[in-house]
Image 1 (cartoon, one colour):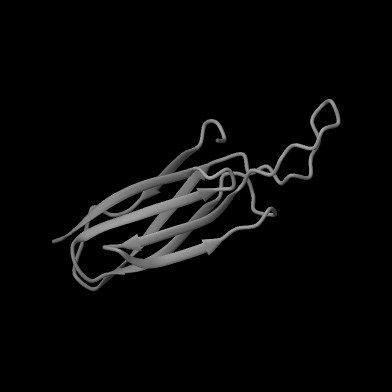
Image 2 (tube, helix red, strand yellow; image 1 turned 45 degrees about the vertical axis):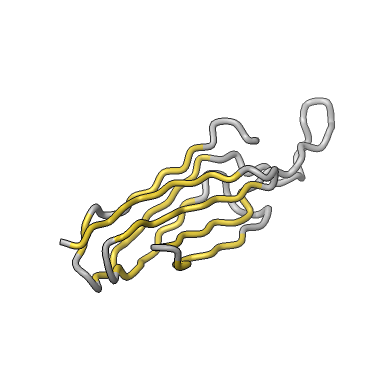
Length: 109
């Protein structure tokens, strides 16, 4: 497990039914490509977030597959329509089998 990994998500607290909202997601992660060497000349193993998924009330909104060329601390910003009150779930999958999650509720107002 990479150390210091922290997901951060920004979602409006409320919206009107049918509104399109902007969601911002950032995860603090070193994203080691597996191509660098340490001071002893040993290859540092690859350690990247390889998949990101956002779902709303169980339905997939965004699914992104990442490769070794992705930057450190990947940031995603996307729009989503909110048909009803509910909960967004955000999941980041790491090469080492770790999963990082966050949830944000949104109400209809």
